Amino acid sequence: MEKLGSELIVDEIFMRLPAKAIGRFKCLSKFFRDELSNNNFEITHSRRIITSLQKKLLSLKDNTIVVDNIVGGNLQADTSKTIISPSNVHPSYLRVLASFRGLILICNERMFCELILWNPTTRRYKILADYYFDRNFERNASTGGMYFDDSNDLKVLHIKRYRNVLTARVYSRRRESWRKINSCNVSNYASTYYSWSPAIYSGRSIYFMVSNYWFPPGERHMVAFDVVSENFSTIPFPEALDLNPWQGHFLSIEMKLHVIVVGRSKNLYADLFKFEDDAWVKA
Image (cartoon, rainbow, N blue to C red; front, top):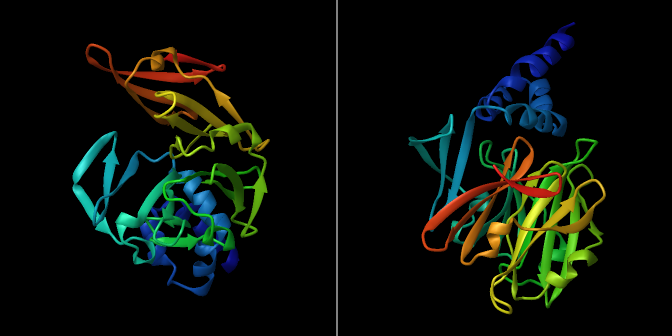
């Protein structure tokens, strides 16, 4: 009965608390420390708090990393605070590849491309790099994304370009190992002329913008990675994006892919599009 009571506390009380409070309760007993530190608790907790009205905005500046609270869609500037980067790496060496349910995927470019999975709220991090990252490195030539598979295993997708060759791999948090996946559908975007954006997860896919500002100027594509089939594909742009110049920014709203288009014809304009039924519609 005593153990059952403790499990109820973990499932019904601790599961509803913010991450910072959970960190303090780990010192109550060995049982609580083990339960609050295991992978299943962290995954379930992150999924439950994702619906919270309070969000965090993390900004990597020249010399600092700043976290702000966003409550009800409004930035609470008076809550800004500076935090320490994982492994005390200087922020100028860090590049954010993706964010997902409170986790940040970071590339430490001081150490080739040392991938770091980081939770800024709990300050916990894990280095995902292996021998593969210790060679064949080009600065600003990698990106990635994160997702949960059907077995609640956290997966990390990493895409790397080196000498016009594109390699895609998936990391399993449960197995703590990498495996290579087929990327031939997007191998034609491996040229150094192409720039891959950070990723966004929406629905059952991870999306990237791939842009070529050289030859021909303004060429752009959207690449989707289906997390179930593990296949890459391309999707069309909204028609408005045929104009130049423009900037596109991905959003996921109610698990549907959106893109904000900011451009200039005669005047500066901004439009929001939603991807639905394999087509873009104005939102």
